[in-house]
Length: 263
Image (cartoon, rainbow, N blue to C red; front, side, top):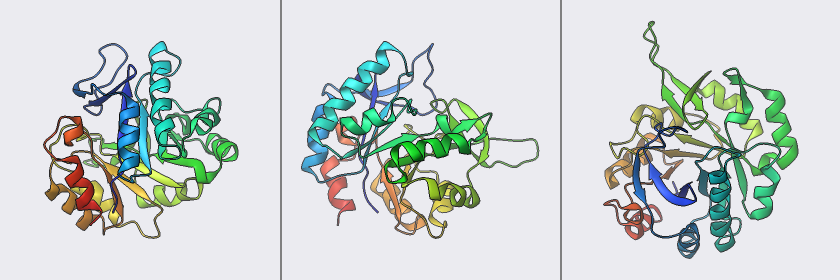
């Protein structure tokens, strides 16, 4: 189990937002806005020996703000080349440019879904373009209540605003495994809320056999939550912690967390 650091960028600034609240009209519910630029976090994570972090660009692709996000991400990657994976608005048109900027991987969600289902033509296109070894699939999910009582997890896209028709199950993970180097999975219903982890989701991920690396994010608020992820995830699920960390205004000391997870 490893700590996977994060840099979430919105309007060119490092922020922590509440998952699922981001839209183009009202912005997002924001937990924290850093006074430090993205380059600061790139240097910090490099100094702590924390590779495999995630930079998420939160603005809509094609906007001025998205370009501001890219510039900030580039600053972080200059400080820690190959230390970050980049996601947010990734398509075949821009994927290679992020790798050239220094990203180890690109993180893709919305592009590989069409009409709520996995579009394997698009998925194969991305694999052919960047290679499986440079592709992370973001399968962030939330529960979708139904009249039949089937409160299953469904993958969400469009910055977590749109439900797909694809359930997050072991079969889905098995199907997508040949196309990706890793999976990144945010528990959207608890993301950014510091309300505790989604135990059911962590258990589901921990019980997946023959897995590739999986990173869980969402709801971590204490060292007890880290222990829960370690136990329910069978010590094979990595974790991203955002708003709870001291570097993002939270109560969990960053260096103490690094030492705890590296012990």
